[in-house]
Length: 359
Image (tube, rainbow, N blue to C red; front, top):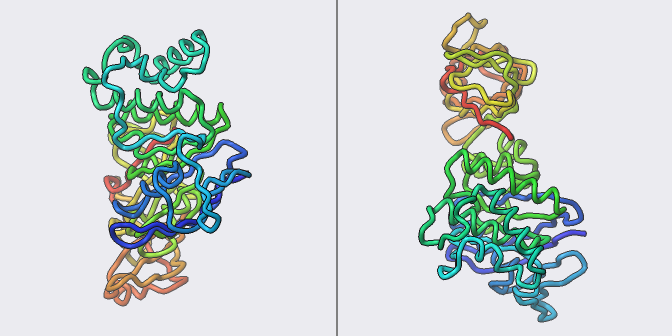
């Protein structure tokens, strides 16, 4: 069973040409990531039935939602989806509880009340049940809108920037609750986000979309750490993104185990001890010779694996107990005699090692 999409639709700049298949017979989240105007929201609207593609087809399992060749089009009210827009308006004349219960009108009163209470508790909205949307903060309104979409238990979620109005602690809480709900219900979700942490921690699959075209698809960490093209690398903006484990920490520094190597970072150690390490390639300095000890810098001895020309610069991929990419000038490559197999020292300031907590 799968959601199978192969459609085309005009965009303000270019055309959306999306072709992919996602399993729907097990719980899962696919994240759409890319620059503004790339067609991410348009794709969600096409899946929801709010726009009609020019050509192609959309199938949800055995059900055909759209077939341009046969003239078939299932209207949005007959598609079992929960859709959350980036700016989803709530009913201004209804209370928080009434907004959440809106899609449950065919449920029995006890079941409806129980569902509303569970979402009130789950999204930390206790005490706001009888308040109108106008009296809520932007983050509270977004939580109510999300609860309204999830309460009817749709098998497919289409979420457009669902956590954008939330502060970081609330964002992590709500993201975790939505993920747990998806697992409990066996649902599937397609989520649009511009947030790197959301893209990295929320889904099993990451799809990079640009100018209407799907450029790369894979596990989030794989896509972020190994972009398939320079365009994808520019979109994700992070060349080095690696899973890490805290082995020691103090007020001044955090020592991390990364692959077969270790790194020193500045900052607060993640609560659970696990995290992702993010290092921009331009923050990696290359030197010849063996590393010297320094408390403020990471000096890692490694071997050059490959060189990837990028305009006037070169990406140098190094094995130093874990894969590390540096971005240097062509002149530096010549002066340091950098070539595959060469021994090299990578120097990284502790302050350039950024920690992204996992959940």
